[in-house]
Image 1 (tube, one colour):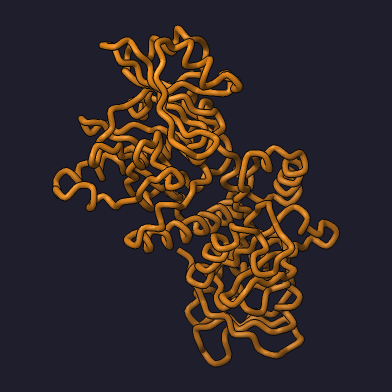
Image 2: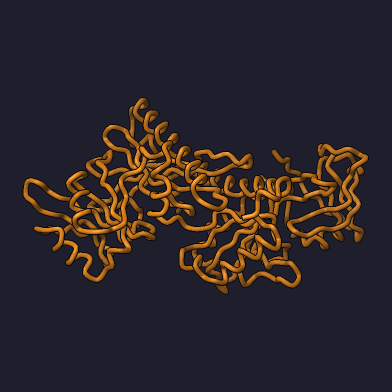
Length: 457
């Protein structure tokens, strides 16, 4: 665990750094190189002259390193006679605007909250996009928020990059692919949380993993009406989902009533109204509801008889994060109750977030479900990491729990939404997930310094 020290600048043009009294280091091996991100600077490092446990940094050294003047605390660690002043975490995204108060549009508030944990961790996080990189000078025009407003400062290339692209479209751009490859190859910068998960690809990779098979509902690409009929016969209802959908958009629930030999389709239409339609054949249903849609872009998933509250289905969002030791931990958990007539539990469709104690007054039942959800989330996190490429630092799971308390994974999201944190009892978990998202950057930084050969993608 890295120790964090308060930063105290002092006026001096010479490159000087005063080490905190609590920072353990042999006097004979005081470093003479200070590193911030990918920038190195020769400097004279000495014990703090007043014996104080603070990090003194001369204005001359701070300027040479491009250290923002409002950084209040930094973690310190040594490697190969070099002193690393904090961990520089670049948060890469798209969708920047020209507005000073909201430079990243509607997501500015999320990034402001994410940056607010910097002092407690001793890291220096900043937000940037592809047009903010100065390749010639090895600098980035980074967006910072130190509590009062957004500021742009020139900063060295970071130790690690946390990918927060907003959608698959921005991720597929050739310029993004080239930029990412160049920063990894030429600068050796680890890049974590790259790539949105493809629903079908994820299920296909996990279905042969014996540790997690039991959590996976049958999930197939759309192939034929016969296949849908087979699944309806087995499970009573099924879901059709867009392969690359998000926020519950485009999900259709199809139910077969054996006694009346009728098919029902529940979905949300283009006017954002919940619809329930009845048909006497599956073919007529699909020809009507999907007449302008390509069913090859959908997956078909087994329906589960979920636990309910007041006859409304409940599913569960569970967040997992990797910490600065590189271990997975469950960082947040909540239930989501479907809105009236809704096919999903999303807030934009009338869903309501509830903590488990609200849903399960009986302590024994609540603890049982909580433990099952935690176990499933951790096992699946390790399995996803094992079966997918890249450095994965956070996952948002959508789980269902059936009447027998069996846990089912409906989806896993590499860039999970944060709607559950609107619940007042989840504020602490909101903070925890933000801290852990940056803590994993500390772990990757240290891994890249100690085992650089293992970090090559």
